[in-house]
Amino acid sequence: MHITEKLESISKYETVFEINKMLDNAHVSINWWGQRMVTIQGYEGCVEINKLAEKYLYNKVLDINETDIHLQERVNCYELWGRVDELYTHSDEALKRTWLFKYLVPLKEFLFSSQAKVYIMDSSKKNLCFAFPPQEFQSRWPDTQQQISCRVNGKTIVRSIATLEMVKTALAKQYGLSYP
Image (cartoon, rainbow, N blue to C red; front, side):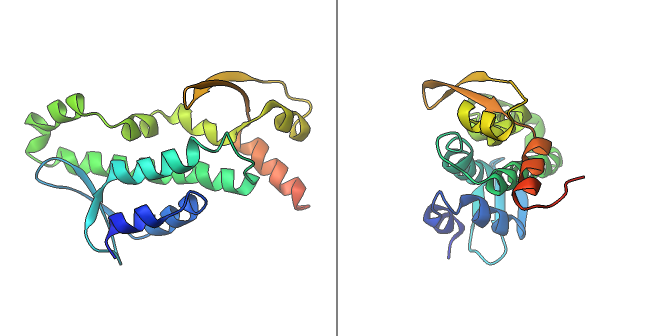
């Protein structure tokens, strides 16, 4: 199966699990046009990192505020952000070793900047994985008050942002475990 067919076949409910599994066998390279490409062992062809990141961002991260998502899936989504970010970091290193880097790539990336790369590289955005509706946030963490207004899909919504530690502690309590 071609890698783009696989990406297109993943439902938004399976995005985090499937992309995480695919990234276990991912390798980055730069084609002669200066594009950041990902090949995945077991699949034919390659795909731009931006296409993979967009599948993850627009099917999961940006949608996470709109649905009731289990805490563990939020943690998995947060951790996947780092794995996708690593692909960009590795591709930056590969890009610096090409002759294109000095001449063509700065112009190409300036003129045709990908929204996915911009979003992934802004690490503050990954905290959206822990954005909760105010009522849910208050029921989980009644002693904490924090709300922000943000725009999602053109709408202004109010959300409360938890931290990774808060979510892991809530998960531990939910399953009767202790969290260090």
